[in-house]
Image 1 (cartoon, rainbow, N blue to C red):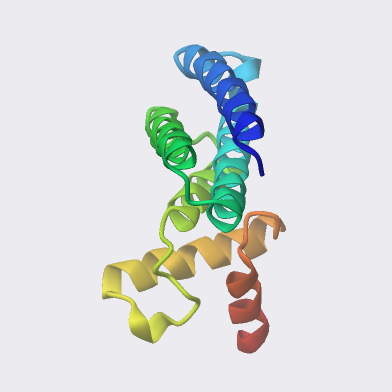
Image 2: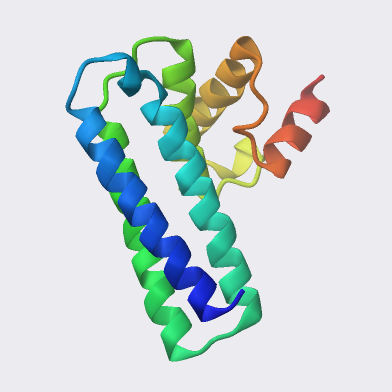
Length: 147
């Protein structure tokens, strides 16, 4: 992924985060999709970072990667301030936690107790809600090995 693509993507993401930040402070119909949008942005940034890491290690890409990581932090902060109103909202908040925890590899034995309980809750909730789009590949593998 070229630097220009990352820069334009960062600008679009920043604009969308500002919009969502404004919605997060309102109680209306638009707020209902905020957590889903924040999760989608977080994952989009994660994939962009992976592509940037593979394509080049130039200083310019490091700079834009740093900005993208800051955008992820901003997305998490917005999500923290939005109260979950239903099980799907809880799932998106836990999905943000999950995607921000790269050390979780699907093995409960490698986790601290509180991480294992949270991870298990995330997997259970994904199954209850019926949304596997929030899962990483290793999460799907973990669920398959349990069934």
